[in-house]
Length: 347
Ligand code: KG4
Ligand code: ZN
Image (cartoon, rainbow, N blue to C red; front, side, top):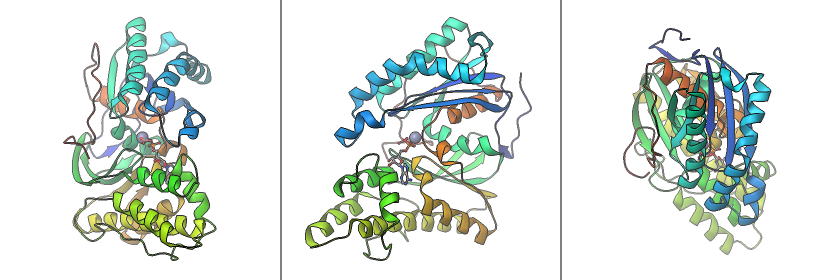
């Protein structure tokens, strides 16, 4: 059931048949990995439900997860062609995320684990975002990872499997949160990231020079200032081109993220750079990270957009790695409100 574990890379290991559930935010996701490959990866988005509110409404999200769960599990099993009784372990996101949403996923996973009499592994959501890259191939270590989502933004060095060192994180808003808030200010709708990227295509990235907070200082990030700056700019500008504002905002955020990676590559000896999280789906960010890695002579793992966004295949990948590493399964899971892959206080 297991394969040998490598210490010099992260990979999608063979831990038998693992079914994973991810419900940390507004996607009900279930995946099945079998024999070290993804057999099913189903994501049911709630975006349309939350769009009228301009953001995720926690109570609505929890109810929608609950309503969809059984169907999404069944859909994933059907897609994989694997019978529920062949499942050998269950993995589930234990946090960080919206407590009400997490409880639905953990409850369903616990029910399956008890019902099928199989081990249950709790997975950190950000560790999942990191392991998304392993679905496309092994990640040589040590690696430098930029994990940027709607709730988190952090720069982490992976020294060895499960050995993480935090370089920096956001002191206020996450990068995705900034995209969402600025999209709302610009009237571009929800979720903001894809809307801003689309609007920016018709704009000039150098039209407005927004501040690059903390760009040349340490490894921490800060994105709350730029949202205020965009709002103030719009108040003052008589005929602001939404496309120009979107393009200039996106340019500023991407520029800071890439500058941080570049700084980190100057002081850290790593084999590869890995990006993950919803913001890692951003086209300009992907291009600039690939360019930077090429220029620095390190590898780059830029997962397919669908693997950057929340999904359960990444949770299965991380869960399988922990199973093979001998992590003991648990009888029940406490959901974890921790905010970082490396632990610590909020942000
Ligand atoms: O990882 P994810 O799917 O969920 C969380 O764990 O938060 O990330 C969602 C975030 C949202 O803030 C969304 O606006 C952002 O990722 N996002 C993007 C893009 N696609 C999604 N941000 C910038 N450009 C994109 N193309
Ligand atoms: Zn996420």
